[in-house]
Image 1 (cartoon, rainbow, N blue to C red):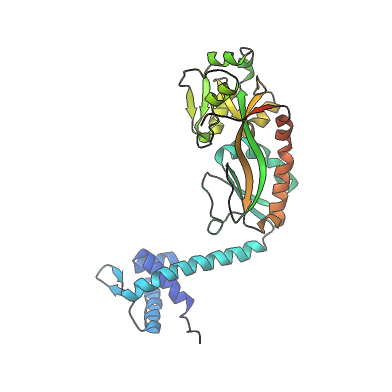
Image 2: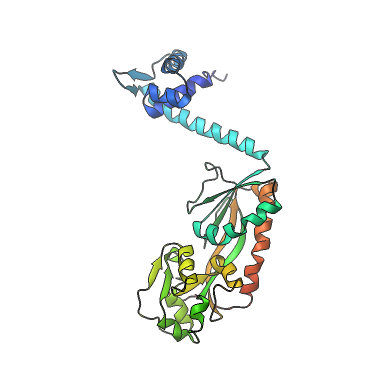
Length: 312
């Protein structure tokens, strides 16, 4: 026979009080009076037959019974909240929450989103620009766009862009560059956001692929790729540009690729979401739209000559 559980409101009152270690703060969280919260906890203690808190002068402490109950109560309410959210989202065909890195959001997604919004007015699109690896069991995110050299297990995945890099400059500098050696005469911009890639995809690797020794120069380093792109657009130097961040600027003529030699990064952008989520109407429509948009990158890729970096 299954033991009868106490009322949910009483368990909720206990969970809040155990987290805050304060009846007053727990009452504020639940929007009830301290007296009402105290009554709920008292009824829970009567149901259990043992006290859950030591009532002190200006504080409370968990008893051994309270310490035994608190972790399970907290976990239970988290699980219940997640299940309720999942049940609601299962039938929500309007809201779509997507997360992607700040640079990709700024340089690739944001300039195009008005097109998706115009063509899909029935979808309420929400974006979170973050490098945080979302936990789909906790975070209310439908779809993630992730970048890296390895995939995720236990999740739906679809490749979007094979990343590659090549020297890029503003048109104002392009006239100064005829050979790879000419790059050594202008400032070199460095992107530290790809430092985790192996083998490294940096200026040393590109100059080696071009048959040259890398110049001895500190250059300017940027922690975010979109900041390096902005510096290159202003004529601040040559950037080893990532195609995912620069495709629109290249097609608009705001950035120039002086040489066809490019480096594969061995990293990809990919869609990631829980299995089954990819079939939800708003998710499927967004993924299909992105895949149509990346065709412009594929056209540029087809014109390039590629090398694989060798420097570890």
